[in-house]
Image (cartoon, rainbow, N blue to C red):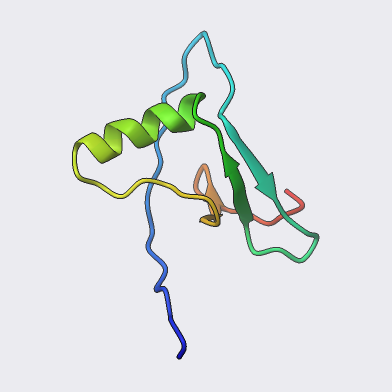
Length: 80
């Protein structure tokens, strides 16, 4: 059997603060990557806080193996 997972697009908005802190994720890419893949999400950091807020309101959260394809309105490649 084959299982297909359809992509979903989630817009992540992280507010700038004076205490920027760590995003809390490890990214993986190659020169030919379309975007970058989230390889690891830490339990602390800005993305963990963002995920917690989303989950508390019944929304999708980002997960390991999700792909970042756009950053600040621009298409994102592994070498960018």
